[in-house]
Length: 588
Image 1 (tube, rainbow, N blue to C red):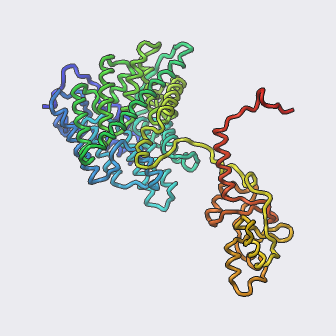
Image 2: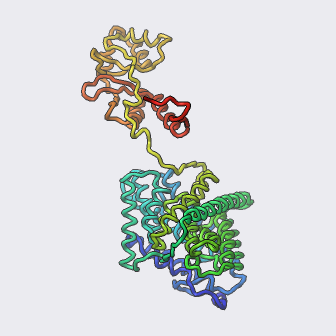
Image 3: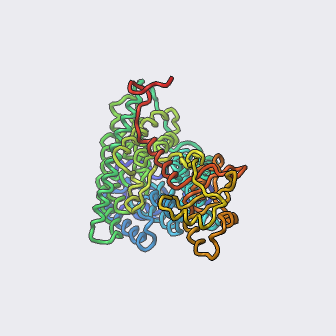
């Protein structure tokens, strides 16, 4: 019977921490989703490993060694493969890339199948021993529910994105009790912008979620820890050093993950069967180190409290890394955050043994740096580690470690573990924010002031002759009255069309263009972005710029001017030159 326990097995239960945190969502529906997922994970764990129908928390590490340990994860992987093939392929993987893809190219629309099948497949994967966390599925499920809610109403893609991300932030807050980190995750990974109309609802969702925790399940951090930080002044260098090590570890794991995934792609059979192979790897790893199976929040707590022997930490690190890489590459369902915390924490703990301070402190730095570097979200990693321990004094060391890991990852790899999967599907995205020059530059800054115009008194015949001249390069000219007041525009196509009309040659341009609407901009009131919008709406290549009060033509903006602005922005980033020095003449 699998229900027998090994002598000396640790009594720390796998889901203690998970249950405390999952039951604090943004609303009653969210709370029930969290309870549903954790209860489902516990139910699957009890049924397949202990042969009982129960939702009581149980640890896979208590299971006695048996050949079934190899086959149970494989059977779970097979069922997940069937669910993905005949249900929804989007349940494969850890979910965050799918959320990003839905935001960028899917109009922030996610299907009801994902909202139902993602938690079911993740519960099956984790319950049968998968080395994953529940946070990715909850983020994906929360996002899907937010998106589904938005699809019942007349909302724009931007508004649907806000609700999708709000649901995802609520899911992360519900699991870890980390509202600030959840909001930073939204800003650094999901929103792709910083605007009040998006940021405020997401922050509000996280705040409402965290408000449920003290009312229903008690307050406090997930892993309450206070470290004695009586460290030397050069401690900040050691913190950055741990971050560099975590960055190198992150780069290695990311590279190995996609190399193994490439290996699965070359297999001669359908991807539906791949999760079963990943399950076999999980089972074999569980025979070596059972504590590497499942979520592993008890391992995180053991690392922070330094209650795990060094030999066990090494064993968990090696086995967890191996089975996580193979299982995730196979396309099974599960989150990456908890495994990243364990892998980064184990390396930080081991390297922290000879360093001043507690090994648990260095483990925390390794966790934050691994998360911030791998996901390329350094602020998320910093605040997350501080919130789950409640130790505000660690904030600066955490920042040093996560930024160092982030810098290493940016130098090592072009894309993160999240965006690489999207890039392999043909969608190359960047994770850098910047101020749009089109939104702060005014029309006066780029317009051509010496504008070639045609007088309103010019006849159609004269205009045709003008456009027929080989030395006239422009296709469109503003038409002005005496005093420079703009009354319209005339193009080469207009002149050719009028030339074919009977008795049109004697008419003036004023007769032809004065009754037509003119798309115009204003030098001080309109941004370049607004001018670009006018160009698109009017399908015009040149927009006259007029004085708002008098209507006098003061300039012209063409598409070429927009491109010059883009070029000047790139030059500001890339062009290097001294302004003070021997070779420069100083101003008076």
